[in-house]
Amino acid sequence: MFREKPISQVTIDELAGAAGIARSGFYFYFESKQALLAALVDQVIGENDLEMAEWLASDGLDRQALRLGLGRALFRWKIDGRWLREAFINPDPGPDVMQIRDRLVADGCTAFSRRIERDARAGLTVMGRPTLLATMAVNLRSVTFADAYAHPDAYPDDELLDTLTDAILRLVYGVTPDRT
Amino acid sequence: MFREKPISQVTIDELAGAAGIARSGFYFYFESKQALLAALVDQVIGENDLEMAEWLASDGLDRQALRLGLGRALFRWKIDGRWLREAFINPDPGPDVMQIRDRLVADGCTAFSRRIERDARAGLTVMGRPTLLATMAVNLRSVTFADAYAHPDAYPDDELLDTLTDAILRLVYGVTPDRT
DNA sequence: CGCTTTTTCGACACGGTGTTGAGAATCATC
DNA sequence: GATGATTCTCAACACCGTGTCGAAAAAGCG
Figure 1: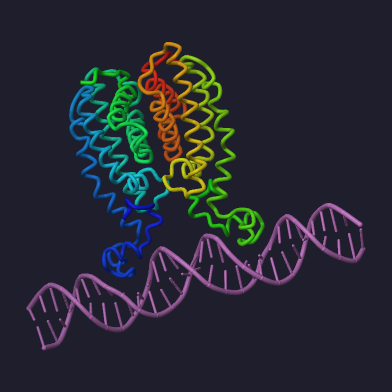
Figure 2 (figure 1 turned 90 degrees about the vertical axis):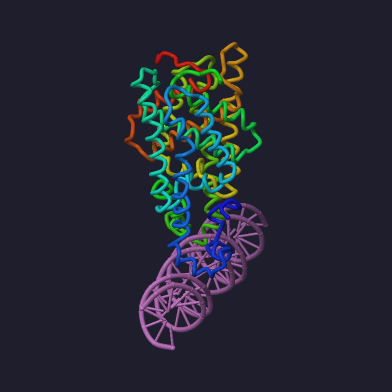
């Protein structure tokens, strides 16, 4: 239902009705709509990590793995973009969601940052402080996908992914590899 | 008041009270809280353009002008970040705000895009479709500033601005100029 | 079958929103 | 400075979504 319309416009009454129970019955399972959303976001953790796992584990630029991970993420955003935006982009999604969201984002940044640090140790040139670059890259990814959801036909998926992949590599490592 | 707490938590009663009128009097001036926010956002248009005017008008990389504009924008975000985030980042700020916001963002991207196209015509290498690069750059800027507001002490302003400036130039032109 | 635990739901109180209509304040005009 | 029109104010009301509570139904278990 969070795919259909803004979360704020989905009433607990509708949620409960769709589940076949009365509104007050909803409160037996969740404390509030925010708590439900928080649980939903929490479920996404695993999937989120898996999408990028290959690239995070590999070394060097590895454009192919990065592009593949981003492609998978874009696919998910195309489907669940509406509420993903509201959970991950919205500055004030309520304390419940905020807590989980912040942890998720922080974890994502940390994983990315470690990847960059490893590359730096391996002799690769890195264009700034790894944690800051990682944060920027992760944020650029989220916001680009959010934008892709908002304007689905603005650019072909392929072009978007190629441009984003190269943009991230350029952002972090300062180079644009061949598209192999 | 939107600097103090999330917009959703500022009641019309408080707004009216602070203005010295009764709650119902508020509706004489604005249709809703969203309409007030929309008017507020609208007022920001001019300032927003001015900040980046120098760089947008100049040619080549012109790191200095870009860095200066970003610095001014960061300063504004440090002050009004709370509600700027809610107006510019929030996916569902209501139809009133949405309309104005989308126009503002689109205008910003267009201006940026024109700048890039001009550079491309002048023989500078550009790393992709100008409109897409411009959108990414503008979004990266917003989200970085929003993040800087959320985590004020994560990085020194100087480092943040330097990294962001170079990141944008690398994103669009693929090069990192000297920091002059 | 009794007993406990789990699950459901109607009824209530609360708080924020938006509307309405009547009255007060302001201002222009003669 | 009386008059009428316009601007502004506000108390009272209706509405909707939220969250709580306790009673009762359903399910699980000895």
